[in-house]
Length: 322
Image (cartoon, rainbow, N blue to C red):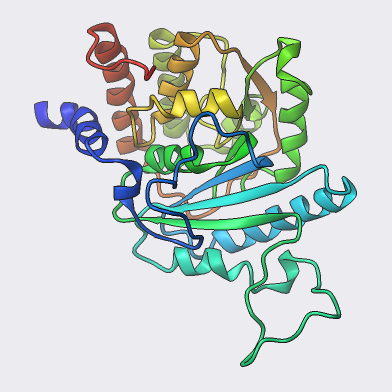
């Protein structure tokens, strides 16, 4: 029991002793040694970075990427070059073909505009084609570190002015990004929120009516524990659709210690420590088959992590990065 309680702390210690590059086994893009993470002083290179953590998602990921790339390409074309993007898929040490499935999105015509008629055909068939308005970058971790670590890796590597975390199952429509952007406002100087959480709280009554009673009981207990230990105005901390201004996102995820399912809770705690406000925005959401979260074990694990976050910060064993 003691070892189980200490697992998040031990996991953090083992990961924090090495730079991010040491955890990366493979990337679809080139970068010089030591340059995987852009320096803090470097200006953003694109308008939006979409970070997609993926573990054993070879079947659900392709559709999500097709829809995301189609939307972003259309938006880039409509904005006449004033909107650019990158999609960063972080393969969290999958044992299936997630990495290949992500790269396959560049070869499916449905996700990209047709190439110019003047483009020469490559010998042996069609070569992978990057989107015109942005770039798809795929990064594979050497081992499974957890969803929180995968999101952290993507956030630190990202080059966007805005950083969107989006789940690989595509449960939230990518078009709801516009709702989150409206919540943040056009300029950081306007003094609005720096973080926008997609929320399913408005769908709660419908979900309660469809779920079994024991699932409703566990979910209600989990939300009560979160409210008692963490507090704050956010009703839905676990929706996998969150938008950050770049400086804030890198500040928070650079300080992240929880690498598994409860990392969202630490994001809320760190936002409070850094005095960063969070807007909660209703989004469309569809429950997708293939979830890897066991409700009972997942709830117990998240309860443990929430308690540890509070204790380790209270005793100074964990501190936010400078």
